[in-house]
Amino acid sequence: MPGMAANSKIFEFLKFPKNFKLHYLEWFQPNENEGLKSYVDRLSKEINGKNIILVGVSFGGIIVQELSKIMVVKKVIIISSVKSRHELPLMMQLSKKTKAYKYLPLNWIDDFESLVVFVFGPMIKKRISLYRKYLSFRDENYLKWAIHQIVNWEQNKPHKNTIHIHGTHDLVFPSIYIKNAIFVNGGNHAMILRKATWFNENLPKLITQG
Figure 1: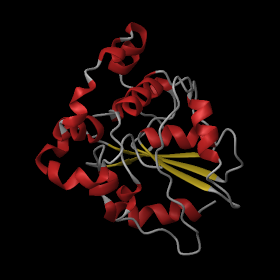
Figure 2: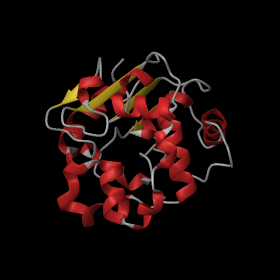
Figure 3: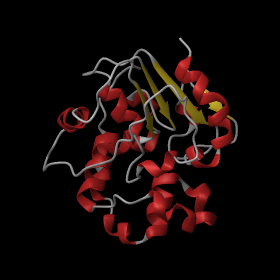
Figure 4: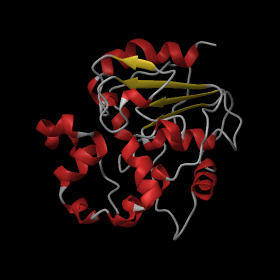
């Protein structure tokens, strides 16, 4: 499951074990006032098989954790994400209390540079044009919905069987708030794209072990 506003092309550089059947999930439009559980329930209808391993990036990591609560899955792997509301950065936690996130000026969705920086973090600012193909779901209602779901996520403690991979230089979800993760030195919020070599050396083992 890709991150907020992103499509499954963000996985294009990764090599997965050959004995697994891959299924790439994509975002779809949330219904008006739809809760996270309802959205995830609709998404679960697209998943079938045995020994399911869910992989999610950023907000997609929150989604796959919610999926694991209503499906039988073998393992959950989250990348550049959070395992509970306590791992959200302080500004997001304060935003929840003050409701300040509701007043974000989302007219910047038409300003692609601003959207890329918001989704992937400021460290990729010099490579804006390279990220255009990865951010295809830019509907304003969806973005408002997604930001609301992240800030108001209710998970109080990490779910079992969750493997967390996180970059030490992630500025969207800073590593100082993250506990019990596999830290990738120098990895930022876009490391699914920029650290493909690391993932191709380590992700297959994390998928198949245990």
